[in-house]
Length: 473
Image 1 (cartoon, rainbow, N blue to C red):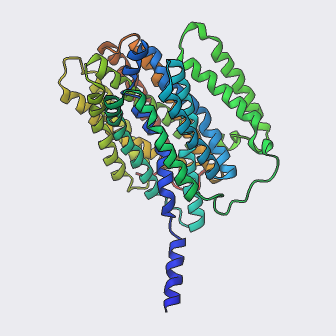
Image 2: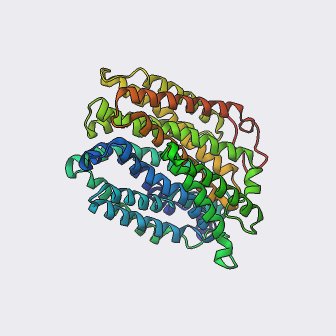
Image 3: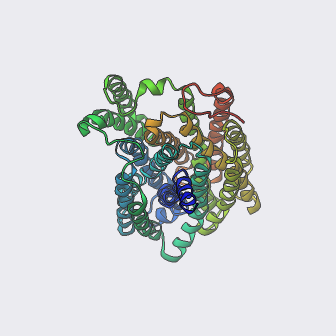
């Protein structure tokens, strides 16, 4: 009986998700949001240190997302082919190096370079986590990732709570440089956990055969990078003098499409992607959702400091209710499998929050700022979880990493639009008029998000192109 009991217990353990993977998965996935949120309260102090207006410090935001938007699908594809361990260790090690560069930087240009390194360094966390979830589903025979996906979403929400407040505390104690130095110990812990706990190769996945260059589709990656880089540069510099950038984008995009349609092992399988309308709709929703989210995170925060007069620490405090509500919403809606109800909740929440922003002025009481943050917490918690779940269920299982990376790419496209809109709305000063102009842009994006969600019939019925059911209420 003892041997049978022991064998039964061992069999049960092998059929459960390996909990040792959770700490490195969570830590890797939060490296990006901690750097996204902590910089929000550091933009004004950095601008004062280098005499740079908001239109220039916006590059500190754009640089990270430009690098991550380029790197996420590429690193995701590498993870699909070679497993998460090596890519995770390399990327998180780069985060530590970027933290060191930022800590020692003596000019805005070098700070932007450090943010670029951070962008590339944080590329592996999310695709690696999604690939590990898929691998564990294959190993255990249980494809029920809702709990783990909720853990990741809540972890990201939690670190978003801590980010602005932690940034304000660090700036108060050691100046804005400490917000970069934080990455050094975080990276050290992530590398250690990854080295000790991540598997060398995903379960039941043989090492790829053939020449690495052919497997990686390097020409496709290069054309994708050229397309995205020129597009993002144009979004960050909406001027008549940059007319040539859309031309480069169209030319590179056309070449990329022709290449991928002919490649034996394409970087992004456009035939499969083009036939997966639900996944394409998810990417579109991600783009407009993050226009709203990041415009609020950076634009509203800058206004509370410069237009309203709060310190970086108090500006961080104002953000906390949004993330606390976001955590509560993620935990609550994460218990339900379907995504349609989550998306509708997030869409309505975005519209309500943007409308409230239009009522604010420099004379508004602080409790009104807190109310806006509270309402924004609803879409913050519902949208991120719904989009993440959608990609897991709608994507080709063999391309989970690259599909998850593409989700982040579309999210960062949204962040680029938000950054450009913020810089254009504020100009040289983050005043109330500029904040209202930004709120109208956000309101338009929120309306588009809700329209796309309501019109998406695939959310009401089982997806025919995916392995699982993403719809429901």
